[in-house]
Image (cartoon, rainbow, N blue to C red):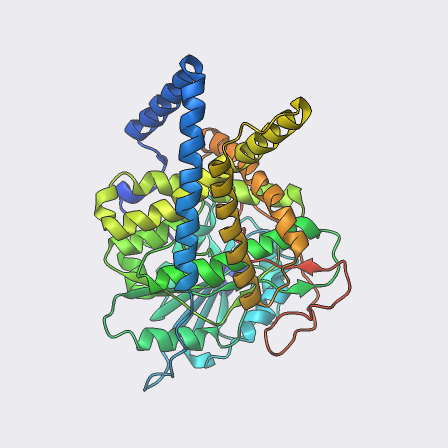
Length: 495
């Protein structure tokens, strides 16, 4: 391996990016004050429920539906503003130099496929610089990288041992070497649209204010070949969930001029701006979510692209749950970090933080209990031969919230070119309830293993026959089929 290090590039101790201590999750996701506040809140609620169960139940029956109503109105606002602006024409002059980074760990199987996809990017080779950031101990992936048919612009960057052993730490080592004006990040299973870099360069060129710091590409789903790792239920729900996110929510927030949690891949930055804010927080397991709000704090704004990146889903529950645990845990970390100084976000930034991370965590916490409450009320009433005790207005608001979630999913799925059927709608509450399981596990992991990186293994997938109009596989392909889904972040190992 030492011979490889002399042939390629090995990062040294100078790759020391990271956000300011006050905005870092480093060894302190929550301050003592925040932790004591949460304990006091939980203790107070438990005492209230014990001493006055009727009053507590009445309050919950009002507060939870009110939250669902607010979320429904929020989704409606995003739906009405979610059309992306047309792609601008290329600016005058030569294209800017572009740095492409993929931070990988234990990805030897998919290395040839990733290299093939990166080599297909339609951008002048003399304006490209690429790094495969690989952990020094990961010999199998390093060997696979050397064996792959890499283009001349794509080199291997050996990340030296150190803590935490996370994806953002590896990305910071690549950022220290970057010579491009723009930089983008891809994951092991990514298949970016070949024109994605050109679109990003054009949008940055048309930004006359200099405040556009990052552009997020939509992470899109397509149908794939049969696979033993496929889970028809989880894959379809996972795919539709992120179609709603990347085709409706993020474009809507962009039009409203709000910050948002970035996806962990296919985000494009100005290099000087990224270095100015300190790169990625190596201690945050959803460094992407944190970075979106950190850029906003520094006075920058975010945007979206139209050219997508296709990815694979995690698969069955054994893979989905650890991945979602990490996302939830990272959202908790990011919430803790950015609520230390909430006023510095400003009204719009604080609104965005609450309606993205806050709502995601709160809804995950209450989904399963809410469904259980409604079902139990109906069953008890049916057995007793009486009317359900569940207030009709509360149930109506819950259904309104679910209805807007279904509408957003339907619109997002249509824009992404994936199917969304009545069966998917019926199965959605079961999927939402699984989020409560992930939330509980993530809360425990935040206390016991706050910086552990739950890795999802990726495997090469045969390419589907894509339709030229949408980039999706024909929708009449015979079942069972595998859907691929976005936001795969697992390219580095747990510490």
